[in-house]
Length: 443
Image (cartoon, rainbow, N blue to C red; front, side, top):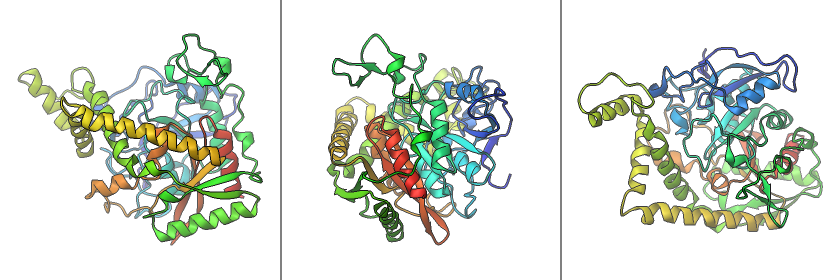
């Protein structure tokens, strides 16, 4: 296939009847599918075939969807362009000389090219919204705890969520209706009522009926009625963005104002530290999660001889790509004795600051708006030589993951034929608000 959007093309049929009957879905290759290999874009898991389905895959089958394949991705979700996959880069269907974004680039490219009606990605620091913006489709990063992560191969547990990708806001929201909800196999989807009637997750007695997805209808919220909505424009995230991206973003806001929305400027002082905090936390969690891939417990062994330390090292040297090794090493360093307080603890303090900033901003506005990506899609191979610049591309998306909030990327226009995405961020479990505002951008 010319775009290299899939690592494995194999149909998995769903039930005959359901909300997604007749729909085809591409599933990112870090989401477990029973009997179909799941590589995470890595040579380490080249021959791994899960014996079980992820909860979201079970729900796709129950809804009647047909899974058409496992979508290409940056290795273990580490990358922003889908160029670090062990199975080769994916091309952007809008312009094949450019990257599709990442790490869910295969999922977004499959939808944009019409090779699947819908797709699932995973979003650790923007990995659904980034490729959605670069490929001109819609991507939703749900609130942490709205969608089960059972069966998702972990990269950074406290940050990542499975999210839908589609060609319209309504279709993405309809897929979110199918996959969201509590799951007894994932404690992060618990939603119990505390004494004040607010959502909490620390009680011992779960109440599935209280979960926000139980009676939700996200697709119905895509009614385009943005009149009376207050949109907070995050001015801090416009600084340093490509001027052409900012102009397209401003034009989309003009359209929303013409439809009756009000805009106010908001500032998040903490976001200048968000990228640094994000990468310390993400790499630290990655170094812990990927420790089990040593060729003995999990992963390709290679049959190396020698003591266990040498065999583990050779298996990891052969099995992991350069970006994965870089993040494991940096994460291990951040967690090591003598440096934990200097790096990891400070990063968690910064994360708490980011959360407080978002709460304050969302007291002033119903949703917040930024460009999804501050740049246009780079050309293939253009950004790999400078990892630091690649990390800075995530500046507009990673704060949302640190705060565990919902966000959506919706196409806002084009520059020189390349798509520009507009990101809308909502309060915790405020998916209906961002879906409604995003559907007005499409109008």
